[in-house]
Length: 246
Image (cartoon, rainbow, N blue to C red):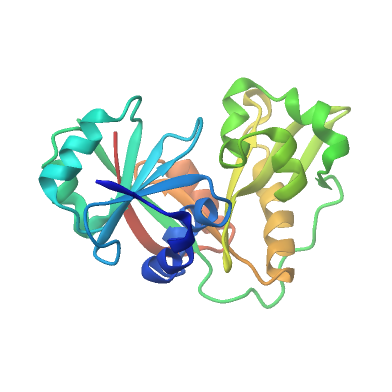
């Protein structure tokens, strides 16, 4: 497997195409947050390896099975690998992963004609809210994971939150942004869940994304009913699915 020069990244975007399930990979390509490896011709297939603390691998197209297995063995700290359902057997045959689940991708079939107004108790976040944002529990760090830091997330991402005095209790943010789509995620502190906080914040975020001509997407594990129900409550429908190995 050889590393592909970053000058080819624009061609890679054309190869994989703008789809709801490709929001995160295109975000990584646009921001040079990954390295690309291929066995011969990247137009046939390649492996995306995110940099730094990002551990989710992505595979596109077909790669030489033996070379792929050897490369994965050499990688340290592999967490997950995501791929199209059609590549499930190829990844399974590497023997590197014990489990596989299906992630459901949601989006809107059309722009809402009259989307809900932004609730009065929801606020758009900015760099001035960093102290409050950094006080969120540790398990909320996934919100800004792809931006590598909360500072960068608040500067380059888009997010809305509900407060209890100076503390954030619910928030919704852009997990990744591509040229056409924006994958979103939500978080509510454990003691304030089931009070519509995530729904209200997501509503505000979705409305602004449409004003920016970005189509919101939502990724949920197939077995995660609360996440899937919230996506559907927001008006989204299933548009794709991918395999997630771990």
